Image 1 (cartoon, rainbow, N blue to C red):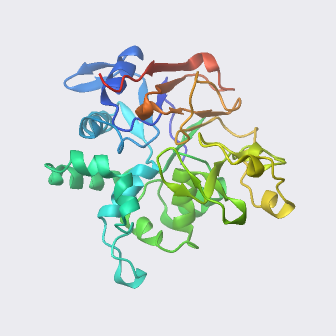
Image 2: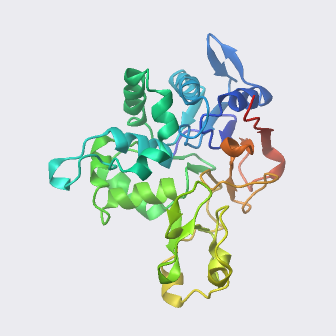
Length: 321
């Protein structure tokens, strides 16, 4: 479903509980509190997901964004961190062989530890937010642009719409993600975690968050990459011998491609750094590692056509403020 276009949108990258920076950014964009809700009629904010985890004020961030969405001054797509929180708290169906949709391993607990700790005294609130997450979309499509947390895959989206007749998530859909070969797993994984490639020869790298990983995040817009290094799209570098390794034809054939002729696409997810810029004339990644002392970035989307780096707006995040 293509949504009716408003006069203007402000697309905002991964907040991760950086509430103070979010308030500063909203003020910079011209939003003001009216009856306790940030508004900028007739504009709308669009959040790219990953409101939760890692940051210092997750509860406050969720309350702010939920109130904006409820009052019509914002929309949001879910990120992988919201999906993780839902799965960690949702009992799996007996036939799945699991206890929870996301098993409560030490690694999974570590990934959402800040959210758990900050809601420790507010369990009812956390449950209410989880129920709210279950009403939200994984993607948004407008007349002249698209929004997803990590990647857009039209084929999977078409299959999802045909099966569920909706653009929003549901408990039924999430229960389907326990089977890796299912449409549900593929859809949620692609849209909220993006594209990735297994490291060759069973290699493991330790990422910036201290977790060992066998896969690395990849670009999804290169038609003819030659090496692993051409594809990498994450802050963690590949070992030099992997970076220079050639991609064989079978690997290249399995890559996802978002064409240059498609609508402008906004994503978060990828922990970029430095001065914000465009990925390509029709792709903008707005995650600039705010929760690690980077920048909280927005893009002012007004007119159809190629994206313009002059429309990027950001604030520096002061972690100790």
